[in-house]
Image 1 (cartoon, one colour):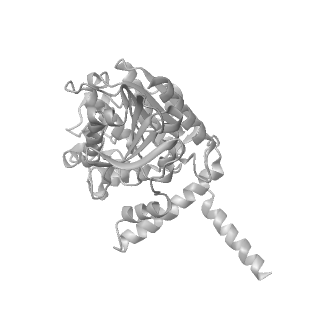
Image 2: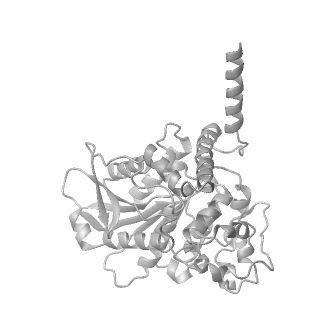
Image 3: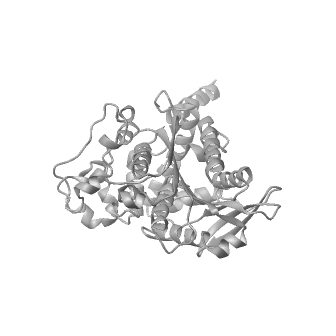
Length: 406
């Protein structure tokens, strides 16, 4: 009897920890709750280790990722998988076997807040393996440097160096890649890097070979407004909570973590900030860039006075290499055709929607792919034991777009 009672208490405690009220439209909510409970456990353990001075929280999280997710490069009957480098940056290469014909090429940047993850993780390995096989394409997954050791612009420079090498005649010839069928892609923070690379290389007239497509999966694109409708609507929706995204941004930009409350209050983008012009503000004005069904009942939070020294202290907040949404229209117009995936239950939803709109306004052909039941990170969770239905659907659509447009 006592054993049963103890078991019931433990089950109740576990259920209490796992249960989280979620919006009714989220795909398979219990799977997301279980995934979130796992993430919260690791995050809290890492915070304790950080507070005790054992190690940096990011190091513990990445160690866990390494134990659980990172796998060796293993070839299969259809795809040859090797670990190599591009422009001096570690890269996992997925190359279809057989034949000597030219193949399309995709360079991919993984997500993880510029601090976590690896292209060698099981989920990314399987994603790129599937892309290579389904598309008969050469796929290269880049392991750029990570925070806290590396901060902006290190990750950007790695992504740019790898992309320039990817476009080089030597690499194209070595892997039999068609120079007219090339895509740069990434998810979340990797989508940020892919967008920034597409802008930089699209405007580089010295290049003889350029990307013909960009595919951005729930990208993070700006850090000036933490009160977009999606940040307000989804601030407590896993797996990317609003404060976590602010923390990732500060880590990436090499800024003091004490600035987090200022970012979350939009004090850093108040009207008395001398480093933010009206022109810059117009590039992320969601009241004009978002359709009414996304704005809903939400209102902008724009402070008259705030903390006017923040942009001077963290100038990368307005650097387009860190925040691609802030790029000028002329720069956007020189980027290749785009695929932008967004999810309804994601704080980054409006970053992607605003970027898609700005690209369209600049004359770029854009496919905006929105998932009403999607959540942040859903596509790369399509392979996990708790694989999500929306993850499988979004991955299929992503690969289908690549098949039709690259």
